[in-house]
Structure formats: C-alpha cells, structure tokens
Length: 237
Image 1 (cartoon, rainbow, N blue to C red):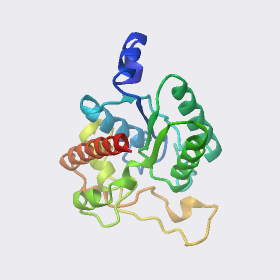
Image 2: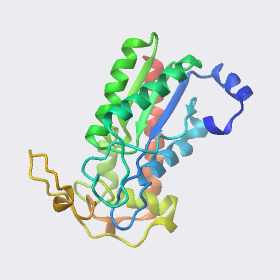
Image 3: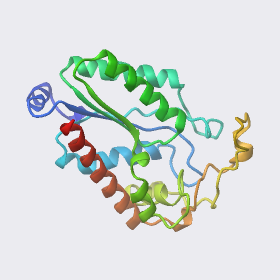
Image 4: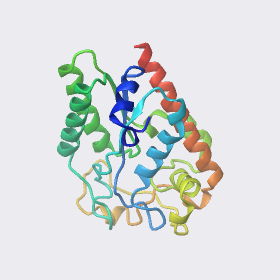
C-alpha cells in the first residue's frame, strides 16, 4: 500500500492487516554526466513499487535528501548532515509509531557510509525508546552482495556504474544521457581530503558502458525479492 495514495479509511483498514511501514531513502546527488540527480530515489522507490502488490506493508513517501560526502562538491548534489538525517528518521518513526505502526524498514537507495550510519544510529536510539518496535536500517546494496556480483560484469561496480545505469535504462531511459567514462575514485586512504573532485572528478564508480535495460530489470526484480525476504524475516522475530 502506497501511503500517499490511500485515504484515512484505507489506512485504518490496512492497519488491521499489517503494522509494517517501509520508509525509502534517496538523494539528490551527482551520478556522473549521464544519470539524473535523483537516481538513488528512483531506483529504491521503483523496486518497492514493483514489490508492493506482494508486500504486506505500507510504503511511505521517500526521503529525497541524504548525506553525501564523496559527491558533496559535485554539481547538482544537495545534501543534508548526518544530524539532520537522524532527526528526520526519529521524527518519522516516532510519529508513525503513534499512528499504530510497530515494524519499520528503513531502506536506502544510497550506499554512502555516513548516510547509512546516521540511519542506523537513529534506529539504535529508537529501539531503546519505543516498546515492542522492530526496526531494520540498511542500504539495499548492503544486503545484496552475492546478487550484485552475479548481475554485474564490472568488478567493484558501484555509484553510477554498470548496475545503476542499467536500472535507469530500464525505468526511465529518457533520463539517461549517453554514457560517462569508466572511472573509480582515487582517494588517498586513509586520509579525509577536502578537495573530493580532485580524486573523483566524474562521480562514476564502475563502467557504465556495460549497462543494459535487461540488467536493470533483473536488478529491480532482485531488489524487490530481497525486500520481501527481509519482511518475512522481520515477522519471524
């Protein structure tokens, strides 16, 4: 059930069937020269919509902004701080809890470390403060290691690379503007550098030239399957 499409009456009826709410997280973030800034949001919301008919859960509107460190200086990226993300998560879950929800899946289409950490930190506090609550907080890519390796030809594929480009080719091909060059970030580990663009000019992590709509379809279907598995796992806890 898409929360933003139903009425108050639908909501009350739905709560008798499920107490599970999925909150998707995306970004407004540079994804090379070829993908839209909303790529993360598009992919995760589409995967959830794909699964919605077989999910016993409500799906909330997405959080469109995230914590973007490595791409924070690239054109088009508009991000928020970890503190803001923690507060947004806290407010959403606490208010949804008051409305009757008890199970929460906080699912990010963005895999940034600081971003996912902020989600998890908020979840840790919420499980301590709210009785009888169950929360999972994760990036969809973080729970799909084996599946991603099977789908991608590119070694170490990630941001705006083969699979993300494939997903957008499948979901909204009109938004794909050619292909960016193959690229990997070259940050001097373990240092935190101020000039991110110097070490990652194109904001691509992988090889977009290997993308295809067929791979994108498989990726979205695999994401939907993984979400269904996690909900079933949550129900058994």
